[in-house]
Length: 415
Image 1 (cartoon, one colour):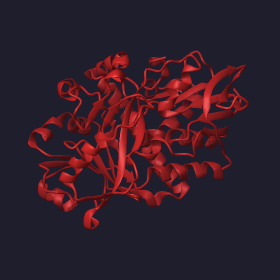
Image 2 (cartoon, rainbow, N blue to C red):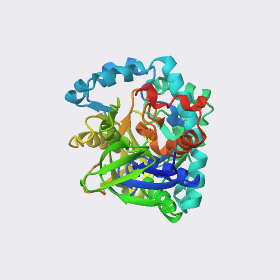
Image 3 (cartoon, rainbow, N blue to C red):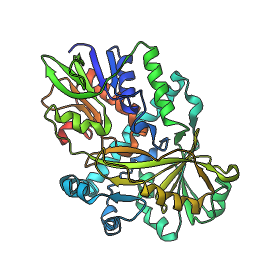
Image 4 (cartoon, one colour):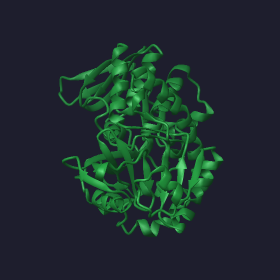
């Protein structure tokens, strides 16, 4: 095929795909309705961590279901009408918690994260954004002995895949993060991992690098796509607006589902929505790295704009109205653990995490649609896996031939 490519979506995944395809000599146009990094990539906890290989649908999920289905936890909320209309996705999601599928997912995600981390370091250096990086890992906090014991599967999985960790006693927690209240029974320090102080600014820096190297960026709202001869056309919301290229990469995250329906593809994708808010710390209190309160159901991350509190999962429609009561509950739990000060944002930020039934992204060419490439469905870990996704997509697109490490992400498993 020709060397013209449109990358649709300017979040972390799309920007990294545009950069990698540009680096390999293709003529790339990056397209989004907003400036790069302004949607889902804006609101995460900023973690680049090997521990992200552990999916939400693991074998222990079955024993947790009775509690989760009460719909009153900080960790998990859902809207009955949305769940009722997506029972097929829910059933496949639960079936993917089987040990065999879980192991395949963990192995695949581990490989993708291992591929991504050095690419992040390279891009941070090239873009001048290395100053935003911390290499101090992050910490999982456990409030009780039973909570610690319930995390044994995760710790065994980390050990199996050589994720470096260190167990912390209450005294050691106080040494490492002295601003935390003494309510935690134990903690697990995930080492060999990174975090950044502003995920959006990192994505924006990568996008600036792409443009400095001659990459084109176009602000446009895509309303549909169609096959035109040997290439693909993206239709804008304005009838007179369109773009065409030899190949099209769809990296629109949660908005990929609606767009791909215009090409006859119905993705089994659900939306694990989440909220964040920035806070001050009372009397200058800080944490020095992201901390995950497993009992509180939130992550607290030190960011350039303040302490970012991010919530767990809310299953609901992609563009359904915000329901920030989950954030309110997470804030109450966080105030038990840390001297949070005032809210710094006028309203809660809402993001959508696009999740496929097996918690793996799609990376590759869509079946029976030559030239249509997919890089989507990264659920909670797009920031940890975006650069690796770009490397993998470019390898498949330009070198051809399925490799063993690509098979777990092939679009044909759901299309």
